Image (cartoon, protein in one colour):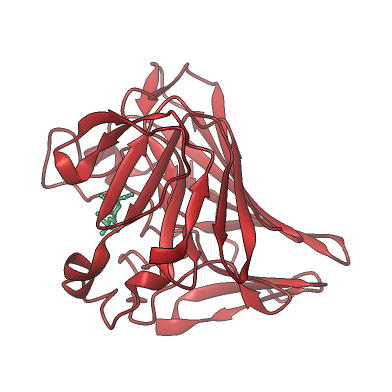
Length: 297
Ligand code: TA6
């Protein structure tokens, strides 16, 4: 059963401002000492996380902000399938919730430099028509010196559920040609730029030299993103065995109306995920939590 949506935000704790953002979509602005974040209820998308006034996340200047449309950038939430639906091409790419309307469960000020927003999403007739299982999602976004995002999936159906998921994190960078990503050395990956061919990264950090779309499997390692002249960013995780690295490069990016305009070198996705063989199975009544932690070092 869906509870009534929280729509009265007049008593939001200090540091939270709820109101219309781009496109009139409801946006929660969270401001704490040293950091600020914006979260849209459309898709529960964290679109901005700044530390000391500097953006850690990338969000496209040409993103759509429309109910029911995915926001291009920040951290879209992907569940219960990753990428195209495995058997039904009429289903939306990347699952059912990244453009859905989420609800505010709670807003908590924990300390002068820390605050926490929890959003929820429940299965409905619409989701059951696409994926025949009852579920509840609880998504907690903690804003402070680190950005922590925890997605808890509870199985409310009578049988086991299996799913994929991702926190499709777009990181802000200066130039994709100059970055290195450490942490995936010797990991196996599916190369989606080459039909999903299985490969293994060598003993070196990952450097991007062209379109990159790799699903690294069986890895719980943190990734450290570095670029000359900028502070490193650490992406660590819990409850996740896949890490996806994506940049569409010029030709594909310029063909995407919500990413065009030469912005593609300023982003790289390092995604905390469970994809491919890292499927998650949850018994009736049980839950699984996946957490991504983003920290500028
Ligand atoms: O996570 C990488 C990926 O699955 C790519 O294959 C890619 O096309 C991307 O996500 C973006 O997908 P979207 O549906 O947002 O255009």
